[in-house]
Image 1 (cartoon, helix red, strand yellow):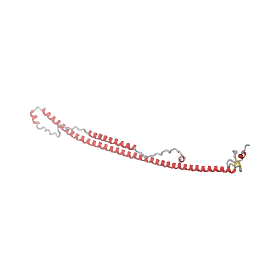
Image 2: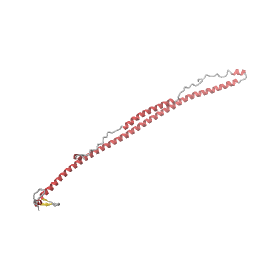
Image 3: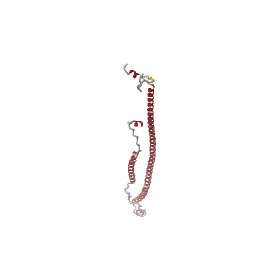
Length: 244
């Protein structure tokens, strides 16, 4: 046996003294009861301390996560409220727009009916006036034809005395209340009305085109300020990791 081997065999590798109340552990090494007990208790304390520290870190992480959950839930609620506000605003605007366009259509229909009524009324007035003149002229033509027939009959009388006797009794030709020819000014009748309506249509088209461009631009410019949350950077330190 080498010198010192016996002392090493019966010495404690923890306190380096001779074994006192030696205890052999499963691996085959022997230690002092007090040394191995103190060692194990120290390891237990380290484990307890480490667990306590990790537990604190875990609670801190949970607190951060729960806070982020609350923040995100609040954001989701705000977004939902904004979605409802957008839908309500869009629905009301559509309803109001439909009412306005319906009113415009009704107004155009009323004006169209008024123009039609005025045209028909004026048509009736003008036609009646012309027919009255036409009727009087036809009566005059009938009377003139009757007189012409009497004159023709007299012209064929062979007896001179009879001719001279009947001639003075012929009715005199009354003066015509109308000129020898009807003077009708060349008019366009109702074409001017059609031209005015056409001009109105063009003006309305211009207004609608310009207004529609403005309305369409306003629709596309509807925007709600929305700043999306930026993604958190990857944690590079222990403190940064604990935020998660």
